[in-house]
Image 1 (cartoon, one colour):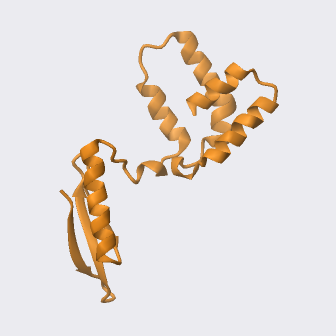
Image 2: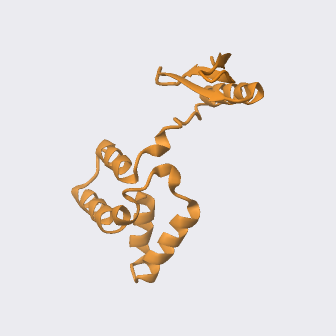
Length: 135
């Protein structure tokens, strides 16, 4: 359950702090200038957790390259040919373009432009589709 409390900063300003526990059990907090914003955030956070839709706000800071490394390592029961194909697509098409980017910075329009760019290079539709799905 989230709690909203008043906090005075070193400069004497009044802020509102929301404390809550994420589904992984970690204590988290966020501060707001207005009480109404803090209460709204607390309600929405609790609702998202109850529905199983809560997303770690720091999750988007991870780079595509790091996330893909974790994601690919967690995949199981794939044929060697599938693993080789996916690694090739990642190395040749996905990572050069998206590797250093933070997940939260990627916009849908950029991805659509990238797909169009891959298609215009003459890549087969199946290759473009697989690269898109890997991203």
